[in-house]
Image (cartoon, rainbow, N blue to C red; front, side):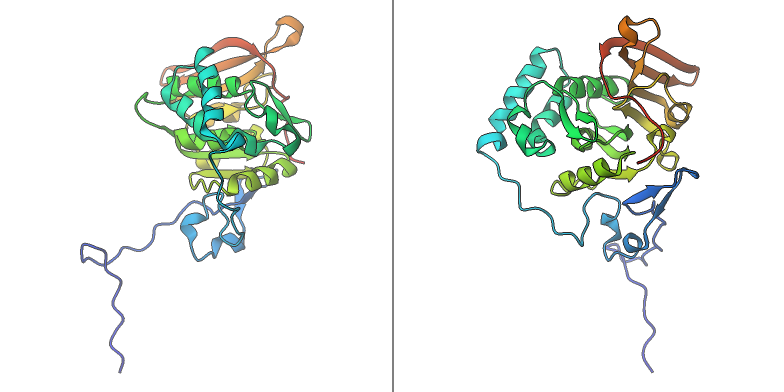
Length: 290
C-alpha cells in the first residue's frame, strides 16, 4: 500500500494553506450590457496563473531584449526630455524618474519616432493621439499630490483610455497596480503589443467601455482619463476611494470656444470637491466599444 500523500509544507514547516481565490485573469473583455469582465478559459488554466494578471502572455514570445545606449535608446535622449519637463515646472522626482525610464519612441509609429521626445502630441491611429509628455507628467504629478505619499507609490489606479499604452507604462512605475481600459479594439491590441516586451506585471489592460469604469477593481486611489466629456461620469466618482483623486479633461461651459480644461476631483468623507485648472485639448469621451 502506498503511503498517504502529505500536504506540501511552507518554509516554516507548517502545512501550506489552500490557495486564495484571485481576481480574474487577463486579458478580459467587458460585456457592454453587464459591465463586468469574464476571463477566458485559456487564461484561467495557465501553468503560471500569477502572470495572468499582467500584460505578459506566456504563450506568446516576448520581443527581443530592448537595446540601449544608441540613438533614441540612449538615456541621454530621455534625460533631455526630463530636463525640459523640469524647466516647465514638473517637480515631482518620481514622476520625472518614470518619464525618464519609459521609452516613448516605442509607442509611436515608425515614421514618427524622431518626434517621440518632442513636447507634442502624435497620432496613434483610429483618430486618437498620444498626449504631450508635459501633459502626461502634469496629470501624473497632480494625481500624486492628491492621492499619494511623496515618498511612496500610488495605490491602485484606473486609467480611462489606454491608447497606445505609454501612459499605462509610466503609471506602472508610479502605482502598485494599474487597470487601464480602452474602448477601441485596435488600440487595445496595439497597447498589448507595445507593452509586452516591458513585462509589467502590475499593469492590467482591459477592453471595454471606459465610461462605466471597472467596478471589480474598485475602490481606486486615483483615476486618470485621457478623453474629455461634458461631465465626470458618476461611475468614476463611485469607484474612487475616499481620500482619492481623479484627474480628467472636461468641457467647461462658457469657456472660450467651448474648450476643455483639466479638472481635479477630490473625494473625502465630507463629500466631493472639484477644481478647474488650465485649458487642455483631448479627444472626446465616448461610450460603447468598437
